[in-house]
Image (tube, rainbow, N blue to C red):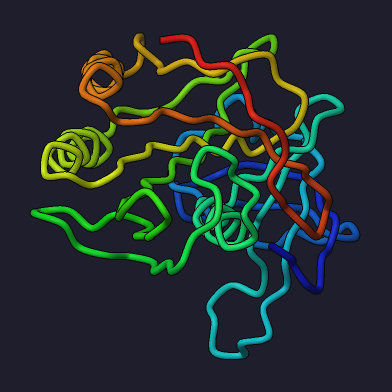
Amino acid sequence: MKYYNIEKAIFIDRPNRFLAKVQIDGMEETVHVKNTGRCKEILIPGTEVYLEESNNPARKTRYSLVSAYKGEKLINIDSQSPNAVIFESLKNEQIQEIGKIFTAKREVTFGDSRFDIYFENQIGKGFVEVKGATLENEGLVMFPDAPTERGRKHIYEMIKAVESGYLGYILFLIQMQGVKAFTPNAVTDPEFAKAIRLCAQRGVNILAYDSIILKDEIRLGDKVPIIL
């Protein structure tokens, strides 16, 4: 996934989950934050960030905040990017566990949920639910960074899909490179962690991949070990 019209800035603060104040060339600017999660360990005053300038003159904010440095590690915090990255990676046969596909569609309804990706391959028909992960501590990445009732709903719906004969995948795209492992965040959302462990027992495939992050790009990286 490519970004265009990238600008470097310094993060000042975040008055609400949708907006941030940054400094660009010495001037303060209010920008859109493309992530409603907390990101408290990333968006710290003084942090170097990257913005994408919009070409829509009707927008209230000129820029969107898409990535930020945590130490020397650049982290993509655009919550829309994981779905796009995985969809393209699936079509390019980069996800080995799924392999070659015949067709793929985004945002397909099953039961009371809408899964991110529907696909068909040589084995059968299936769904992929994509979760972007940005919370990292000493190489261990966790999801979620805030309780997510919607996330739990997707997990249980995926179990129903597998029980109905579909292939089911929960794929965590870690929006940074060079991590050690992934684990569900049982401290922040113990019910989500419980749901993930249950779906692994019920035949749902749990995958985690990291990402290669540049200031104007995010693409699929390597498979990451999972600790359940």
